[in-house]
Every structure is written in C-alpha cells, then in structure tokens.
Image 1 (tube, rainbow, N blue to C red):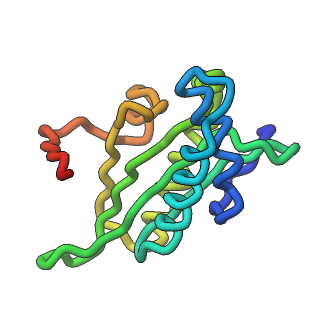
Image 2: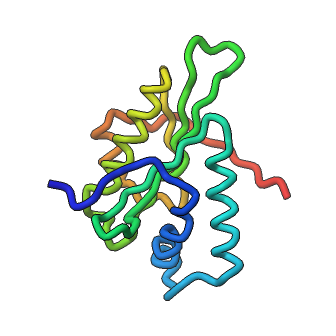
Length: 150
C-alpha cells in the first residue's frame, strides 16, 4: 500500500513545494524571493487554461513530488494533445514509486480530457527514469528545439 496520495494541486501547495526544490538545489532552505516567485508561478499555472498541477502528498501533509501538464488543440487536430512538462520528486525518493504514480495520474488526466497523444519533456529538474517512461509506452522521437527569449 502506498504511503502517499496523488491529488490536484492548490494555491496553498506552493509552500509545500519549497522543501522539494531546496533538496533539488542542495540548499537547507529557499530565500524569501524564491518562495515568493514560486507562489506566483503556482498561481499562474493554476490560472492557465488547459493546465493541470498534480502533487504527491504524504499522510503528514508533506509534498513528495509534483507534475504539471497542459492540454491544447492544434489548428488541424481532431483531438487535443497533452504535454507533461514536469515530473519532479524529492531526490531522496527517486527510487520510489512516486514518479510513476504522478506520471500515471498525469496520463489519466490527459486521457480524461480526450487527448489523442501525450508528449513528455525531460527537463533538468525531471526525476523520472527513462525506463519508467518506456514502461508506460513512451518512445523517444526526434529532437526538441528550444529558444530562450529574454
């Protein structure tokens, strides 16, 4: 039996994400400005049409990881497509089932919204193993191009 649940995130979860990010950055805690920016980003994500934010929560209320995804329609699409852009768990939990559970729920959300395909982006913060992705049926295709616009 799991020692956590996966649920839809809320604005109040921003504070619970701070320890995860601090662990990723190998810091004892995050600075106030970073906490404020994190809170703003959670609010922005939750207000974005087509976006979903999921969290894995321990029985004591501590957050263990999170995932974010977006569903969009293209001009010539017959069904929407999903993009899972983050699956992040505490580094100390990388070998646990948390990342798989978040990914499973993110895929379920995409399917529930009628997506005919789902892409997943592995970012530097992503802590999901490629073997887990293959277990869900993901295949590595092509290359992704990126442009930073400042």
